[in-house]
Image 1 (cartoon, rainbow, N blue to C red):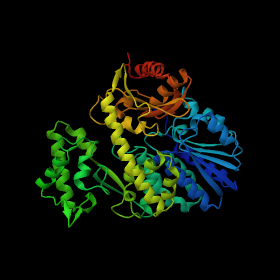
Image 2 (cartoon, rainbow, N blue to C red; image 1 turned 45 degrees about the vertical axis):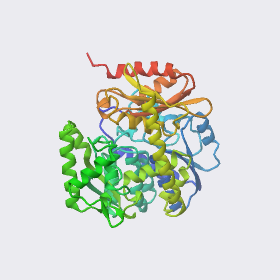
Image 3 (tube, helix red, strand yellow; image 1 turned 60 degrees about the horizontal axis):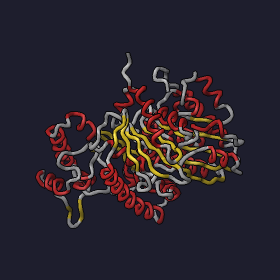
Image 4 (spheres, rainbow, N blue to C red; image 1 turned 135 degrees about the horizontal axis):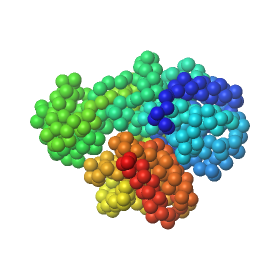
Length: 483
């Protein structure tokens, strides 16, 4: 995306409208989706919209879209294929009779050059390609894959406005509120849709994970964004801190959660945390990370993971990352019985796996190399979660944040999964991981892409050193101060 080009929101909405009209001509469809929270949310939106339209369909989840998956999609016997939260990187390889891609990753034509908008549109003329980047809208922070899919679904039937909460879950799961502690761009129009029908609520509050599902002391204990001096990873410190403020930890035999506290109790804790951050040397940056917008799904039960967009997205991630994306799909589509119960079990296991992975990285150590830092999880960290681990390590406060993180993990078929994570400050300094990963992976015979702040690739086993050399050179050129 060229930041100097004006956004063409009307053009994007027109593309969404045309895609909706194209999908509605089909009597059957196959939805192909990515496995993360944004992908599962997007698949749920597409599936719900197709069901409302009476279009017979099925949903298939994939870890990545490569040429093999593209060929499989082209042979699909449905009248239409609808790729959500993926597809832009290989749009020219999709040759099905009706193709719709609703994605927000850097499009294929954008990877190496910034083409004029007219050329981009002609590039997508054989199908329906809806991607904010094509209209100079930043898909990394202003609209997710679920949000792009929602734009099409809303044009299929105005009643699909009821799907706005899922689009917000997808955006939050994609960390689109992370940079400024609030959603931006077209995400806010979706938020307004949900608020209008009473299904979403935005408020300023602590942004710590676990507001709905963790005792207050545990919510503080596991805080990493920001790190709380003397509290993060300190159970006794958290309990003592709350008691010193006169906060009752229990009501009867039950632990009290953040959502159980009175306004005055929340205010007392928030004020004390701000003072703690300032006294601990975190300055105003830490305070700014502490308080921001949070998004609740008003039609979901309070004190559950589904009531908070951030916790809902983590539940979906737990499903998708362990080959159970269909469980997440069922939850999004309303199953509060078996699917929800299974999802919570997966979430519990997911948290344990992440904790073990972080401990492993601490044991292995993070290596510094020129303009990046890296670690290799080999077969001890699942390839489906190595990107999450990379982001957690980078934001843990235990490693420098002046260069991006590159993480490896073994995948199937003698391949290696590469995940990269940067910071908003690095992006503002010129970092573009989507381009860096694409160029480096292609140099070693792999395939990759993503966003400027987070991207991934698949390369052959044994090519890691060569990949590191290649991506380090690209990152160095991006972060080199201009003369």
